[in-house]
Amino acid sequence: MKNARIWLRSGLGLYSVLVLWVSVMPVRVAAAPSGADKIIHFLMYFVMAILATRVMLAGSLSRRVLVGFGYAVLFGLGMEITQIFLPWRSFEWGDILFNVLGAGLSAVLGKVFYERKIAV
Image 1: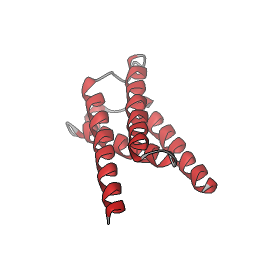
Image 2: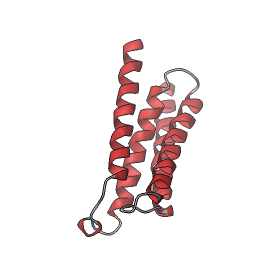
Image 3: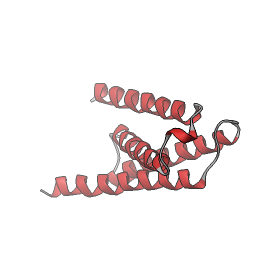
């Protein structure tokens, strides 16, 4: 159990660093199709919420899901605020919305599937 926790925390840490790097690096706006960045935001924070929920090995399912969701949303908000200070990036409310939607879907699906697994 202790090894699992170390691997999960390491995975979340590495994934968070990857998202941080992607969020602050310069990008070419013309390189991506319109709306593609919103899909990327949704998927990045969907995965982050899953990883953050899995790190919480103790506590009720609701608490673990809430912590995973909260971690992903606050991390995303922090990245958007950081982008205010980067001349090659910009703050966008739409990015925050898709971060929240991705983390939220992860939380809902995690709770539903885990509870269904227990009930079977």
